Amino acid sequence: MPTPNLDPTHLTRDQVIQALHQMDQQGPRMPLSTVYDLVFRGKRYAPRAVAQLAFRLATGVPDAPWPLPAGAPTNRVLEQLDFTIATKRPTLENSPLLDGDVAAQEQMQELYTGATREAVPTKARKPGRPTPPEAPNEPAVPVPSTVQEPALAYERPAPEPYSRPQALGELFISEEKLDATLAALRRRRNLILQGPPGTGKTFLARRLAWLELGATDAARVELVQFHPSYSYEDFVQGFRPDGTGGFRLQDGILVDFCQRAAQDPARPYFLLIDELNRGNVARIFGELLLLLEADKRGPAHAVRLPYAPAGSPPFFVPENVYLIGTMNLADRSLAPLDYALRRRFAFVSLEPEFGAPLQVFLAAHQVPAAVISRLTTRLTELNQVIADDPELGPDFCLGHSYFCQPPPTPAASSLHDSYPEPLLPAVLRLEPAAGAGRAAGYGSRRVSPAPGAAHARTSHCHPAAAAPGSAGGVRGAHGGITGAAGPGAAGSHPQPRPAAARAGSLPVR
Image (cartoon, rainbow, N blue to C red; front, side, top):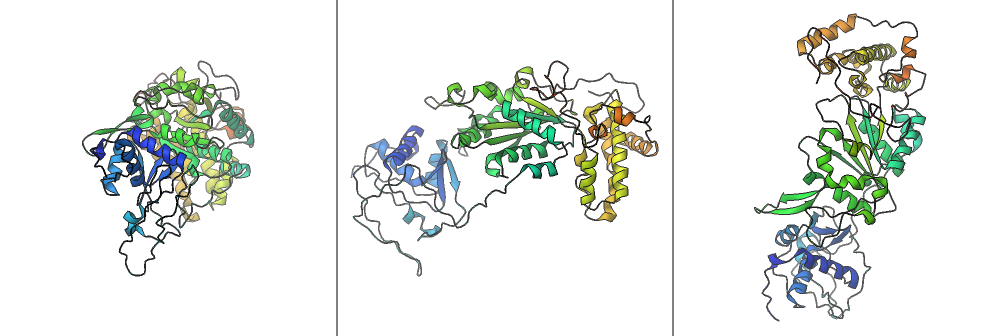
């Protein structure tokens, strides 16, 4: 047998991909790896088998042995070529070998057309372990072009069904607003839920995805949170240390998610972006901003990524990918979203809900009726004060989510009375001592609006006061839910209000 002079670490990614394609097309019988899988485009392969075939193709020697042992040495070569190696944690079902027999299971079969499989040498085994039958002259049996994953001793439980009545029972919004939100998501494929802190934006985003999927399918819903240090390299593609002093190209969460969705085009996939405006959105998305548009999806609009190697396929966003972002309007330290991004999303605003839905929820959690009445009344009045404040406004109202985890015992439910006080210093931008005094002053100063004023008001902070069961509508939802969004419409980033001279307060940025 000729001795190959190729260093195994000099394999190229193209040679490995060629080996993977040959495995798919020629259908060899592949031995299974009990510890590791090479995962490529939704399929699983034995890493050592892939490496050995790529080595034979590279050297031109059909029976050249792979010089590295299975496990970490082989995996390291493949990982440096930007392939994903996944660890198998479950026990293989109906497998005659255990994890200790990795080498025996990874005996390489002949992968050339017309070649016959050599005899598998019998290895010393511990007493009690079954030995697979020998078949020296058995011809290779073709398998389907899609490499089958080994049967596992356990399976992931099927997702629980999720229905419209379940959503309406969990969400503090009206059925009409839910329908309008879903319609905007389906039409634009990109949606931003905005509003004050604590209004259930992330909670709603996940349930919108479940409603469209019809089940609580975690495999098709991905959550990522933006932050000031989040970058294009994290989200799309960039170079990462490889652990050996070098760098390797690695796909970010968006590219990985879109590749998964492209393998399953008949079903929708949802990418949830929490706190979207905490990151530099224009830099994070980069040139992919174009591909977010509903009419720019699919291979016809693919673009080449800046870091992608020559010859790699261009990237596109599949038509079955939906983006749902959440945005906290109260944080004015963040830069507003530019128009290029804004016009690619539909916007839906959420407001605090201290009406009947919250009251029913708290009653079901054994919160005393007196506490519920006092809490909802005081918080509605407090939000009126915040909404009317020239330095604050409706974006600083307190959301109902702060009160959706009541104490476990009814006796402890009185703690709800003190919840607003620690929140006020942050909301009013006061020093802690001044904020505590202001909160204490609010406890003794009742807001007494004129008769009927609470119902006549159109403040965004208490939509339930407008009409029983009303969710207040969609405040200027971008994309035509209640009207087109233009300059100054809801959905635009709040602009700082004139600072009023008030004792103890700090200027609002």
